Length: 113
Length: 318
Image (cartoon, rainbow over all chains, first blue to last red; front, side):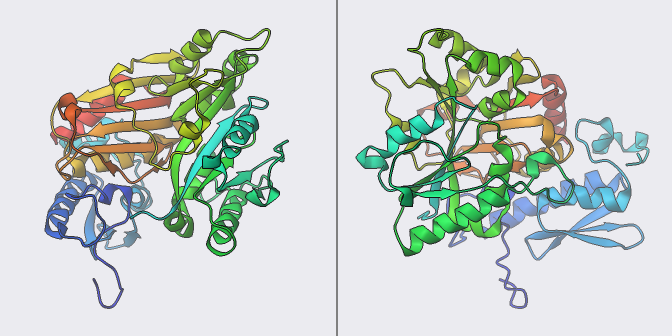
């Protein structure tokens, strides 16, 4: 737990609940959770990178989304990352569009919202 | 142990028999300590202290998406019910009866998004009531009636014994065309037990057999389909995909349910969501059908199976 923020270091969003064991506390599988969260961040960055954005972990619970000029928005849960990305990057995050996927990076053209 | 108050949402078009069904349950010993919230005063002639009346009041939150509107009336009524349960009389469960024209999605969103409610209340099940006299026509002509069916875990057919009633088979087929994975029960059936429908305190149903039988179907503006996944699902990639999909198209995804073998959990996960709102996944105990693989059931309005399936497969391959 962060002593300043009193944050436990594990999200309470639905996407954070796929833990090894079906128990919230004690959080024995914290390392496994962290590893999965790190993989999620890596993939998020590959997607957001196309929009000239990046994302960092914020105390193990939230996400900090940055644009290239250093502007930052805090996304408390994974859902909020997409809204933050749209505001910072002036793009539309839509997984039904080709432009969402990293391999389409070279073809990506920013789309106004 | 989860000690939150389990709430069952009872929805159904005007005159479908919601109140009668609830009365049938609360008159049994099992249902006697059930707290009830009604949007409209009905004719329920039972202990009035069980009731909290919620005058309809819908508040749009930022963005103005109707399915995410905060139902202030429901939130306040739930606060009162939980406080009643903690201070004056103890309820073992609660039932919320929506008004006939209500879209239940904002109620579910309110329960899930309010931090206080989330820690005191959990959604146990959504039950939709449809009557055999007007039900078929309502499904044809009323989008609200179709939405109520699309997000239900269980559908109860009523008034099948009345003159001019459609047959239970016909009604059942119309319901399954909208929601192929839903459990359909007939209130007139001698084996029907109201406590089995309204007295549950588990999590929203994950009917494994029904999932396996679910077929693609289309009913007017609503279509449903199943996507099967052969390999273990990469949970981080899946959550990125689903949150983005719900962000972009949640207003057209009436319902999503699924059972997933994932990289993150030791057992299969049951997932469940209504429009923009997902509930925390439930870990299923290890069982005989673990080899059944992973699948997702979608009920959508105007979204194609192929587009969703291709998108998911593509992200899982990244």
